[in-house]
Every structure is written in structure tokens, then in C-alpha cells.
Length: 600
Image (cartoon, rainbow, N blue to C red; front, side):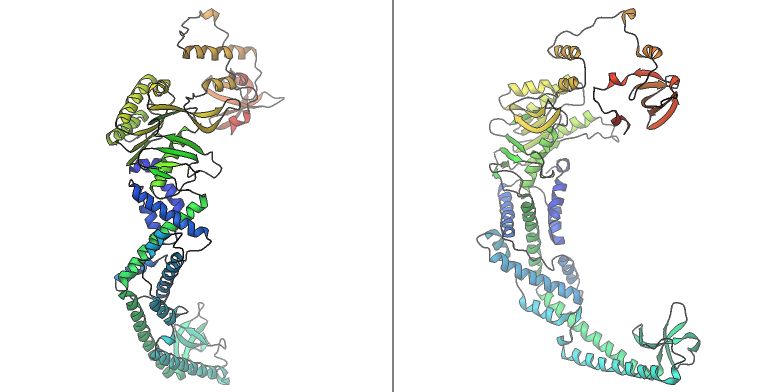
């Protein structure tokens, strides 16, 4: 699939929404690697899996993906013959328990999820390894019950440490030692039991200095009386470490012996995590599985753009049955581009196994290719104009277009002289059509509308516009052609009616007015008016600095000759006599216009 198109249609943003529902790194990686499939059987399979996951979730059951987050990393360590630490073995036990519980949970839902049951049938369960790991590792360490030898060494170690503490307690209670002691406590410094001694008495106490305080006023001394016991303790700690390592190695080996099967479990759990992420996303949006086809037929019923909020205006749309090319017209910001992106992203979503927000009756075609030419790809480094870049994209699309291809073309032929642009656009639309593509294009050009009106396999569509309130309705009506509503906007913006009527006449190919007016018959220039009338008002456009600078009147300070003018992003205060009126606000803006918007 064309990466530029995926970027234009915000496919990665859609995948991010799904990825948020993943639990494991493996599942997130599967989302990252996902691309739309052109094989209808693959799409059917993935949509069925998504739907089965959704069904299980709707029963209220929680899928226990415990221990799955970093399991792939642990298996990599296993491949490197690394002995697992206690916490890693517990995480492996959690993973094995999760596998067992997921297997039991999904198996119990055979009627709801037959395909997922077939998947988990390939998973292995190892309850004996799981139990062994939980029994031998407790409280983040190897438990004494894991080995009789370990139990014996730890008991001896505990007795030795108690003897050391008893000796130190006697040291603390001896009256002759009181003047040396900083605090009457037994401290542990660098794994050695010691007594806090005042620094100026450190040479008066027999023993080894094992540390000191930050200020140096206290030293920690291990008295000579416990030296032999400390050596015995060190020896026991060494024996304990050897036995613990041997147990960890043995437990790691238990896992390593099942490495192949556990690797398969990891793969299946990762896939299940991915599938249930799709199911969670579907449940969140109340998605549906649409009907599928390979006959280029698309029908959207109340289908909003996947990335827009729940209250976005849904789209009703159809193509591929009675016509193969659809030309959308209407005002700027009326929703034409959103319509293209909605059709494109919904198609990619379904081809990726995602359910979509839509109503029953929705049908999606599975295409070999989807191409989009949307937005301005002007390249400054290559000195390409907007039109040059636009035509380059259209040329590349033409080269790669064939049957089972969806084309989404925004403002086709724009960016150049209108007549030439329209001619090139119509020629390309013909070429795409003859190569078997399904084309959805937007335009303002009347010639393209006329072409679509007369071609038996083309049709016009219009984005609805509320002319009374001057706002787009974001609704598509197929079979009608729209316009840019320029005349309605001109009327609302107080363009004189006689000028609007004159413009409509030009649109009907009435002759243009080429009459020359003698200079003496021209109206008085605005600057001349200004000379006669220096009264200014907020929003007036004025000249200053000898007519070289321009600004808008923001405020007239009453009782003074001072006027505050907004120019080049700054507020300037100057005498009114230095200003010349260029055009009054009453001539610039319609009645009722909020002039404060000019200064924000």
C-alpha cells in the first residue's frame, strides 16, 4: 500500500488508537507492523477474530494478560543463556498462569469464538513448571523451602548473626564503653554489623572501622570480639549465594527446556493481545463488521470519520453500482475533503481488520490499491510549485492505477489557470476511468461538473450548505452539483445587489463591460473625502508616515487629537492630523460585523 496515501489519510493515527488497548510489547509491535490487506479472505478472517474478541468482552470477562508485558525480552535473555533472577522467574510463572487461564476462558466460549479457540488450542500449558516457580520463589528471593541444603545454611546463618548481635548488645551495655558510644544501636554498614563510635575515640576501641558518618563525627566499628563470628557469617553467605545460583539455574533450565513451546505461546498471546485490542477498540466505538466485496462497491450508512468525535456528522455515501466516478462540489470548509478522508480511512480500517462506526447496510470494497492526492505537497527544496507537485502525484497515480483501485483526489486540476486546469483534470479523470479505477474527486470547476453530468458512468455530488445562516451542513447529496456559494457570501457581506447581478450575468457569458470613464467623471477619491472630513471611527483603514504605512483605527482618545492605530502587530498613538483615511470601516465590513475581531 502506498505510504504517502497512508500518511495523507492518517492511518498511523488510527493505529495509535488501537495500540492504546494493547497490554504486551509483542501486541504493540503487531499493531506497528500492520498494513491493510488486499486479500478478502484475510480481511474476513481478521474481522471475524475481532468480532469474536468483542463478543467475549461483552460477556464482561477480563482477559488475564498477566506477565505478558516484557516476556519477549526475557525469552531473548534465555537465548543468551542468561540465568533468570527471582523476579524474572515470577514474571515467567505469571505468564504461564496467564496462558493457562486465557486458554480456559476462551475454551469455555466455543460458541462465541470458534476461531480464537482454534488459536489457543496450539498453546501449551505447564502447570507443573508454574507451580515449581511459585513454590521456590517468594518475596522476591529463592525461598528456603527450595532446598534442604539452603534451609540448613540459612538456619546456621541466622544463628550466627544472632550471636553477633548478642555480642554487640553486651558491648553496648558494658559501662566501660559508654563514653565511646555515639548512639546505643547496632548498625549495618557495608553488610557488616557495627557500633556507632565517637570519632575522637576511634583509636580507643579495638576492632575494624567499616564506615563513617557524612560529617565525620561518627565512625562505625566492628568490635574485635565479633571478628571470628563475622568471618563465619561471610563464609555462610558465600555458601548461600552458591546454592541460590544453582537453584536459579535449575529453574531457568526448566523454562529453557520448553523454550520452543513457550516461544509459540508468546506468539499466540501477542496475537491474542492484538486481536483483543481491536475488540476493545470496537467495543469503545460500538463498531460493526460491514459487508465485503471485491466488485468496487462502497456504501456507507451513517458512517463518521474514524478520528472525529462521537458527535461528528456521519456520512451517507455510495459508489460502484450505477457509477464509478463521483465528483464532489460545494463551498470551501464544507466537508469535501473530510468526505474523501472518511471513505479512504474507513476502507483502510476494514482492510486492516478493524470494525467501524456505521449502521447496518454498510458495504466496503477490498481494493488492491488506494491512492490519495490531498493537500499541498509543495516542495521548496525541489522548487516545485503546488500545481507541479499536484500533477506529479496524479501522474504517479496514473502509472500505478488499475482495476480494484480507489482514487481520492482533492481539488483535481487546481493551482493553475482554470481553463487549462479543468482540461487536464477531465483528461486524467477519463484515463483513470478507462484503467478501471473507482474515483472520488472534489472540484470547484464548472467544466468538470458538466463533464460528470454528461458522462454515463460519472455523477455529481454536492456538500449541503445552509444559505440562510451561511454555514456548511457537512452532508453529501449524490446526484446534485453544488457551487461555492460565492453569490450568497457576497450578498451577506454587503456587496451591492447590482454588482452581484452583473457578476451572475458574466457567469451566463454575457459580455464584459469595457467602457472607459473620462477622468473628470470619476468619483472623488477617498483621500479627497478625508481632507474634507477628518472624523475617524474604529476599524477605518488609514495611511500615515507620508502615506508609506497603513493601519486600522483602534481608538480615538476623546478630548485630544490622539488616535490609537493598529499597524504591523503594534498599537501606535499619534496625532489625528497625521492620518489620512483610506477607506471607512462602513465600506469595508458588513453591518453588525464585530470589529474587535480585527485586533485579536
